[in-house]
Figure 1 (cartoon, rainbow, N blue to C red):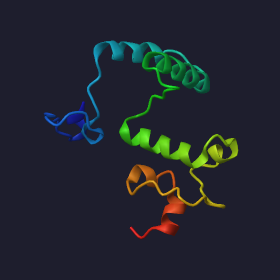
Figure 2 (figure 1 turned 120 degrees about the vertical axis):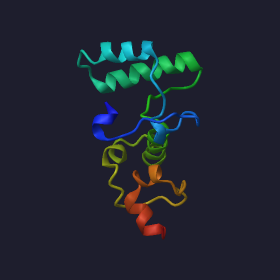
Figure 3 (figure 1 turned 30 degrees about the vertical axis):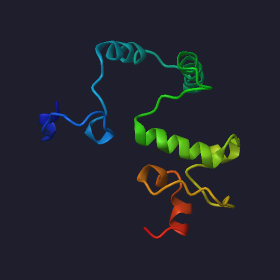
Figure 4 (figure 1 turned 30 degrees about the horizontal axis):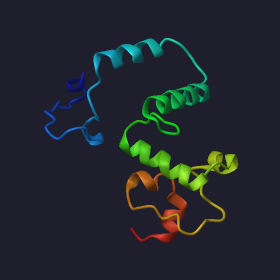
Length: 125
């Protein structure tokens, strides 16, 4: 498949890194993905149910599936920025308006994608 795009597959001797395709998918995960791809569901219901299931499995308060570490950091940054305020949640990624001091969480691209307006006003990259 990748060769048709002119991309050369590689041997990953580094581990699970997003820029190296994350990880290979185990057969049982592929089967679950295939089964899930055959029906439509309400994504909010799915997210809530999966969060509860992950919490039960891990002992954490809740859980969330993400696209990888960059997606997880972006989601965590968005959560820190918006908290539980539905208006702020739905406003993202637009960060115009009053800003709370002390929300500078780092200098990585995954954080910048959530906080572009604030970042560009307060940091010289």
